[in-house]
Length: 200
Image 1 (cartoon, one colour):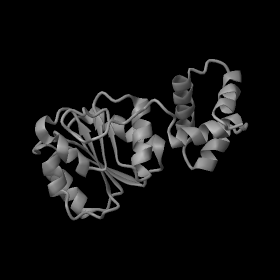
Image 2 (image 1 turned 120 degrees about the vertical axis):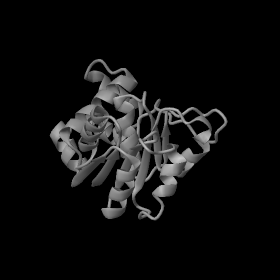
Image 3 (image 1 turned 135 degrees about the vertical axis):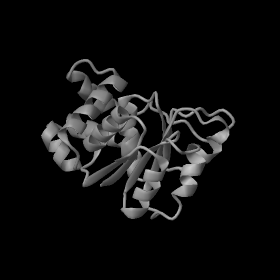
Image 4 (image 1 turned 90 degrees about the vertical axis):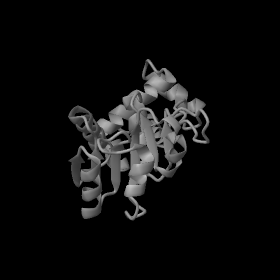
């Protein structure tokens, strides 16, 4: 996967890069901090994923960024960090994904995996005066269900990672998220939930 990260804050860029590396193998990552750098880099190199701060220096929210990114290949996902969008909410629907700065690590991992698989998602975005749907985190994601199924069938973290083509660390993160969502405290509860969910 080829990724372009456009964020003003160096620490935020670094954290996002680490999260993306845990989700999928990355061929290369380009990091920029202004709209002009974003546009020039996006038009010079081919990317599978562009993640940009909607309030990037030199920009005017998502509408301007999307307009200026026109002409990129359609398979390039455009995802935005959203802090406040005032009356720009309707333009969120034109992005492949939007996440809020207060999203949890657990939510972000699932969000990026699903966006990369082709879903259009809006994570923790205020619905006020908008047709944009909030992302519901109450159920297990498709990937979490796969990890859960393999866990209750006796697969190790390493075997699960190999089968799903993800890193062992990502498998561990998914298992932790599943435990949290289902309130699993003991190993025996995995089996109980497996029966309840029809996986055993």
